Length: 413
Image 1 (spheres, rainbow, N blue to C red):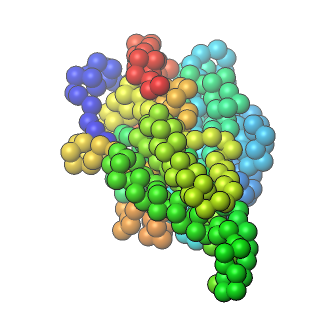
Image 2 (cartoon, rainbow, N blue to C red):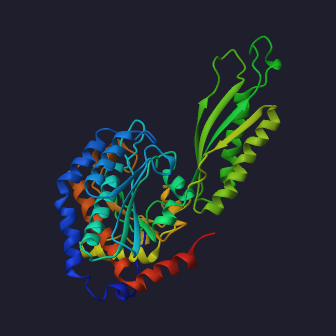
Image 3 (tube, rainbow, N blue to C red):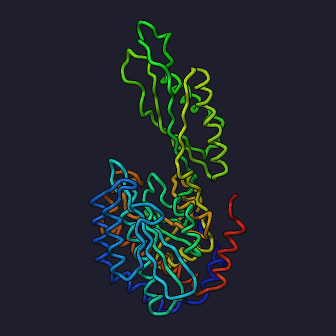
């Protein structure tokens, strides 16, 4: 969350974008207002959990197909994923992302109904420019399931779909404040299981091997580990099974944890220390330990492309949006997103845009706010600006070259 120096903006934006391009972007998204609102409400009012977003996925697929996109369903082997593509020949290639999964218990408390229509709006605006030959190239909208658990974008990256189809990638995310930098932390999830031996807890506890004791020892080891980790690290979890009866030594206990760090390198180091906490508990109690990390692998931290960010900020400021300084907003977001993995393979941007809400993301208050007309209008405004950023990348060779130069030079290892 920071502001870019004024001279940087002037380098790229000292000339106004062609009025025809601005008008096409604005008019396209404005004319889709009611249709996008309908899509958003249908997704919001029928929340579906990760990898179960069949209604939302088919709703978006059918809509995009009707609008002239070539839609590839069940993309990368995921039943609730798609890729919608439009091209008018060789040229630059932009990828946008739509998300549409919800959270258990609180529904669309991260505003994925808004993310879904933001991706559609941006893709439709760029498609209109391509249709009118104001730009040359391709736009692809990725329908990415399971951002809240399952990491659909990680699968797309592993299958090289982003790398094969795009030169740069962008998406939007609602939040309580505007910022050019979205979620930041690398994250992985693990299921911990201990297997022991059951015995009568009153008559012969010495014959048992207590799986719950092992789990609690590992949990306590993690609590002590926190004292010796970076203040930006996060370890949080819950016990999912602690036994069946108080008078039986538990032969099985389990827990789930999330582990987060500022970079994927720091995450790998933290995971090693975390694993040792539970290995030590297994050795101390005689239990067998099983640790199952996410099959897709970890979600990477966000590598925001400064060139793309400067462009988006410029256009948002033209709309009257004021961005907080790093001192006002804080320099690190403690959230995570699988778009981080995309940012490691292409110049990428995921800014967050403000909706009026009395609560942060992942709360009932945010879910309620994500349904409002104000949030819808904020989504359309941010979508117009992100579409303009894409247009700048198509039209300005110096900007495109700098975006890739920044990506290669600053890419974390």
